[in-house]
Image 1 (cartoon, one colour):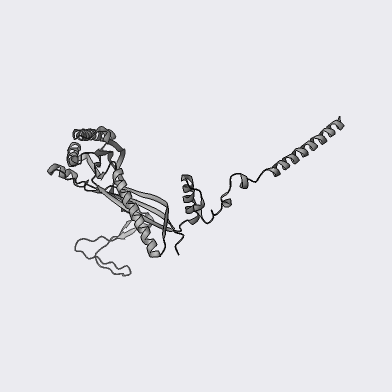
Image 2: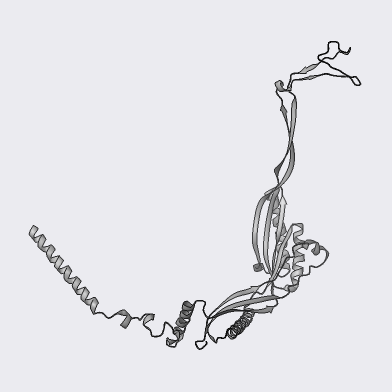
Length: 343
């Protein structure tokens, strides 16, 4: 039995050796991948120094651009251009709300809820749609204050350190005491010895925290599309909310700035091209092809903070609100080749 196992092991080793030799011969007969398969960039003639040697076509153009950017980095001429376009805002965004303070949470929340309900009703009465009203924050938290308190503490002294001898004297009477004199004055003086502790009072000032009540804050973000009615909306809101009204800010924007962005983009590219031509001319080189361009920038709304003095203005005169003009700015950056014929 042992001889059969030994013979089987030897036959298995011979078969494994034969399979390995066949695999080695097969690998040596296959053509190199760099010659007949997918060729590497290094095998393409002229690619190392001339990316224009790639065949024409959209895919080749993308490869040529990527190659130029990757190999040249910041070489060539790199400039940026800025363009602006102005327009009139068509949307006002108001940040407002109510704030109540009371001794209990229930009372404070109830006051804030009533004021907010009146505020929303005032907004809707001025044509503001419900979908243009959004709750931004809602908070309930305690309010504290600090007050100064003077506290006094009475401390007793030990009798061993507080024993005193006192010589009483009447009003207008002169008391003379001479301890070492044998013949003293005729006035008898009787000393009084105090053996009990003498109280001592110490006072100090400290600050302590005192609960004022509970504050409820409910703030809204409101979109007003009729800019001619913004002042009236603010007046009605402050009247509805009363002294609980809080008005944080107002800003203006263009809801769809795409048209202005297109205008600003054209101006930015024209500015970039003009700068590139000027840089090339001053540098004494010929401007080559544009191989890279990117864009940044966007609309920049103008904001006005009108919270200060809002309630007083609403009571005395209509609130004047001016939307003004807003600008959309676009910035582009481009990279240009330096023409090969340049010195």
